[in-house]
Length: 237
Ligand SMILES: Nc1ncnc2c1ncn2[C@@H]1O[C@H](COP(=O)(O)OP(=O)(O)OP(=O)(O)O)[C@@H](O)[C@H]1O
Ligand SMILES: [Mg+2]
Image 1 (tube, rainbow, N blue to C red):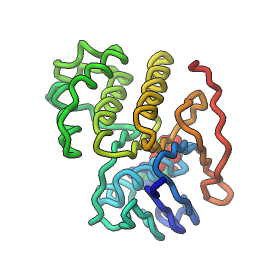
Image 2: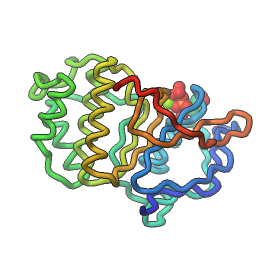
Image 3: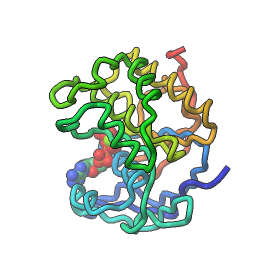
Image 4: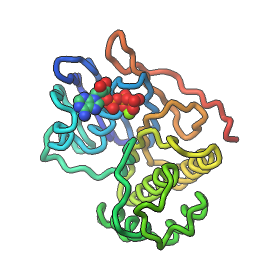
């Protein structure tokens, strides 16, 4: 399978505090990786670098951020170069609630953002599965609970997948009920069945998930990500 991402000796520091040391690994198309580790270890920062690359906005939010080494995309372009473009489906850990527009409009904007038309049948299917159909044509502002907001972010990013094989998820189960966590797990298994090239990098602490097959855990002593065997509890079955 094609190489999608390569970390070469990446070191990440925040105001002289070392978060990551000597991160080196290759991630291939079709791989599905869970990242896990203590709160504050830098998982979300690492995920944002993977999803969006080194942006001015990231440097402004994480004051004193320095990253050395290389993070190469499938074409060998370095994501630490702000000029490198990116086309991924990325659900951040926490995102702004959408402003004064409808869910269907937001879904259209997400799809158009990666150069494709909205697949409205798929939107309807996803909304139905997550019990959100009635929200489709409503304005989103002040209209969603935390869990519903997270689901809208997940749904809009799943609609980008025809344009990219890389899905990046930061704690997607946060705020979700057990039922909707199971639905998400089922939907991801369907997506993978339909597209075996689908590649997932996800931060999560939940071993119930059965759509990943690899795990890396943050090691505080060495500031490295250490590969571990992944075993799902399979309690969604
Ligand atoms: N805006 C910021 N400016 C400077 N440092 C920050 C900022 N936000 C977070 N940090 C620091 O960056 C480190 C990494 O944060 P990050 O959000 O990546 O951690 P995390 O591993 O995702 O944690 P969690 O499990 O709580 O989501 C934290 O230790 C925190 O102290
Ligand atoms: Mg985080």
